[in-house]
Image (tube, rainbow, N blue to C red; front, top):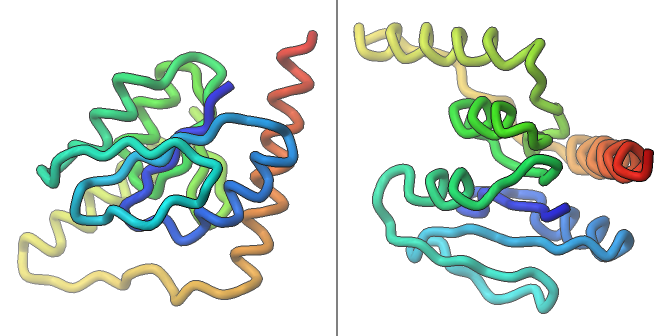
Length: 151
């Protein structure tokens, strides 16, 4: 199992590394050249060009069944799920076959509203409790996946 992180705007990189170290799992941070940051000393960094969707395409081309992807991009999440990998948002919500269609539909409707000149409310400001919730849900998802791979 490899952990792929859509690293351009991921606010929980440290939390991902912390839990992944505990289970000795490989982490690959995929970032555009514009978002390159100092290495965390644990993760492998893959740097792509700054074109739209470059990070997503790199993850899509690498991810395999049983891997895990952390992203807030619903489009990427839907493709990851089709490849039979696990996917979670940086707020700790696991994307599933049951919830991805509704999320994509809401995104589509928001885009239509904005194209028509309307406004839509963005996500709430991130809180410390969301970081803790991410940690709990991420570790729970990893444990379940590792347990299932032993069966």
